[in-house]
Length: 235
Length: 83
Image (cartoon, rainbow over all chains, first blue to last red; front, side, top):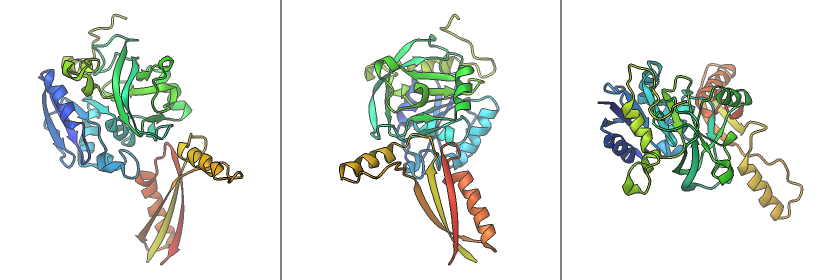
């Protein structure tokens, strides 16, 4: 059974939904307060959405210095899996565990609605249960979701296939003006993933959609001691 | 010595600054036709104890590199004055 740590910061507000989504797929999920330094034997770390430290200075800028984030960086360096959702994406970029940054939405408004995204990379711990090119309708809820990086970084992300989710341009789904319609990225090893949409809000029939459920079933199927295996993709 | 450090953090040139654009449009709507290239950043002030102004600047620069500015998207300038 997967040991799953959900990190809680002051201002996290998707922690309970995220824990529930992990528990629902059979994981042994528990909270870790941001001041703790011990992840208690976690195989997987989930950094939930919210407004850690009120988004003061920049979203995620202060959370990255929490003691728990030092433990998360060590966990990731040792091959442990990490998923950052929304504010979790912002924190992982501020912590430089992933490249780039998330800035104010180009239309300056907070966007809370379902958007259409394409799954572009199924070689990660959290997306192995999807098919490449599959379209999902997932909720977003953010004010700072415009992904930016320098041209070299964008070229590397695209060249190495490190974009995990992309807003569907034909559907005018890009809610924030992010470069290349990027909605989620991964590191080359596929153990660190960060996405702006909220799969935990679409992981149960009672929520009206299960499009996000496979982020969690993929995680549950992952063997921490083996490379990621594709369960759905037959490329 | 205590030094007053003024930090000016600005979005990197070339990056879309939607706040600056919105304010520019608002200025135009108010009749200020000549206002162009509006960009919005932030100002941070703090006291730093250091033996010299150079060291105060050095400390403040490190604070900017590590926290006050995002090296991916922002540039900063520092000014120091004696209290």
